[in-house]
Length: 206
Image (cartoon, rainbow, N blue to C red; front, side, top):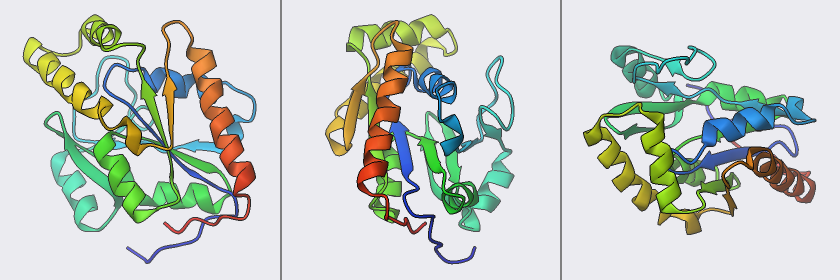
């Protein structure tokens, strides 16, 4: 893997985190529909977990076999990677570099572990944490998904509480209120554009 490269002036590395069930995928889908969406590149995370019903390889995630994931990890192909809920997840470094070099904001959807790792590597990364209206609402959303066993659900709920405790590590916290997806997406874009305007000459090294 070659050494660090500089992004175009003003291009931001945006991290969106939050506990399972908070609605990260739904918010990102809404962001894609907003005006100015071409200024953003949504980096597709690699994972070793199996696809859920309706998920498309290369769009929702890049689904990799364990040996393929291990090879990328050994070759420093990930900006960050972590084990989450028994599966491996990683952010492909080249996708981030390509977006920033082209002057687009690179948006990562990663957990709090990954966010901390990226912040160490790229101190000027913009961290945004999505929070639910309440833990009761969050747990209700998790149960309604019906994608986990009782044991897996218990683990996700326990991890969610630990993740919520890390919200103060982030630059901005945005509440994803039930039924207000478009408002939440617009608020995130507003934050990114404000940061872009105040750091128009910044060139990130990734």
